[in-house]
Length: 243
Image (tube, rainbow, N blue to C red; front, side, top):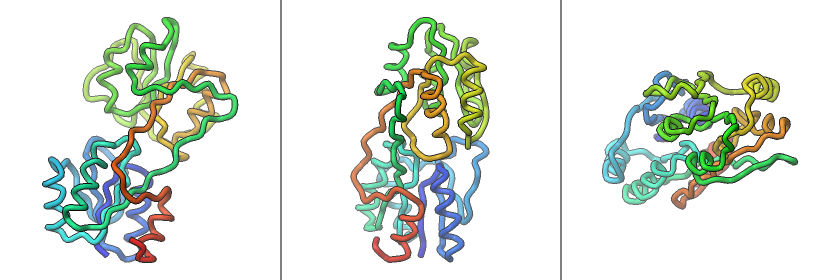
């Protein structure tokens, strides 16, 4: 089967590797924001498309049998284009959408719309640990005078203010390492997205363990389409011809 995966997540890479091992013709499409991504098996396409019409044309030109949206749970703009493009091209689409994290017992969560709302609530002496990704770095550049710690996989495209410490590292992380990091940096608040999954969950458990306030950015609403929660469920759909 000829399968197109929209990736950028660990699930997308794992799914591509397993589908290639099963003998499928797999292409993974990456946005290209990460300069040195961990690459999946199969073929690779890097870069944007330009909109619904261009996506539809790509689906039809390469005659894909299935399209799988395995992008990040916060990639709402991409998902909003994929659903109508697949419908117009007449190709089957489903989404791999990992479950949200549940608030740990005793954790102090404040749910916010975005980083700006969290900024407005942060006390003057607060020291936030910010784990959001590159898209929000424009907001962080305007962060008020608080000292803060930002963690990214790669260095930001533009320099951040002197009050922002940048840590460059890749997941997975452990409860012990996250707890130690927060203690060493004097962190008082965590600002993150409800990304779900095991790779970065330790930060919310560490914040709960230390009694820190967590500003949790709510997930966007994605365009309606069939969803599964795991790579295993996605492979089962393909194997069983259920989609």
